[in-house]
Amino acid sequence: MKDLRDDELVRRAATGDDRKAFAELVDRHKEGVFALLYRLLGRSGEVEDVAQNVFIAAYRGLPAFKGKAKFSTWIYRIAYNQAVTAIRRIASRRSRELQEPERDGEGQRQKEWSDPKGPAQEQGALAGQVWTAVEKLPTSLRAVVELHYGRGFNYPEIAEVLSLPLGTVKTHLHRARAQLRKFLTGGDIEVGKA
Image (tube, rainbow, N blue to C red):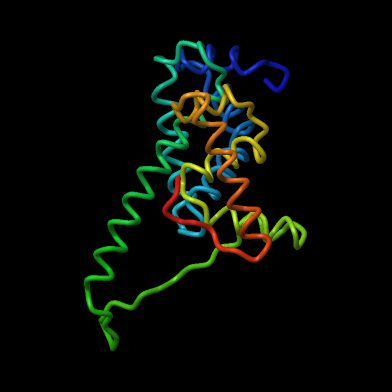
């Protein structure tokens, strides 16, 4: 299976007869999907659940996959959409939590903040600082940075994954670089700008 191209694996997996073909696709793309989700979701603790949803959605959608785009582009699009949905869900949950008073004592709700280790903590100091700064960018800019620098996608591929015009992708990447430069030289990320 390892010697087959993605499009051949997709064809085999889409018929439903070859589960090993889909398992190989997952193995090939799971690292990239997880990296994109970590960049978009940060340390929310949702990455594993969202990644599972991505691969379930991809498996279910294989019969409809036309092959007009590369499989990697298609699955990153699914990952981006799933991440945006999760971000909305997390924001809604946090908004409700902020409106509820924090309670303590036996049987009362306690706020727990998890801090799973992300890939940036395993890198060098500068790389860690850069990716920490990337996590502070708005979602649309984070996605462009991760797809371009983290996954090596070119502008047209990013435009396809994010359903954005090519010029918008270039603008987002330019804005992201400017904000990162500003942050790394002692400024602050402009959170509201996308």
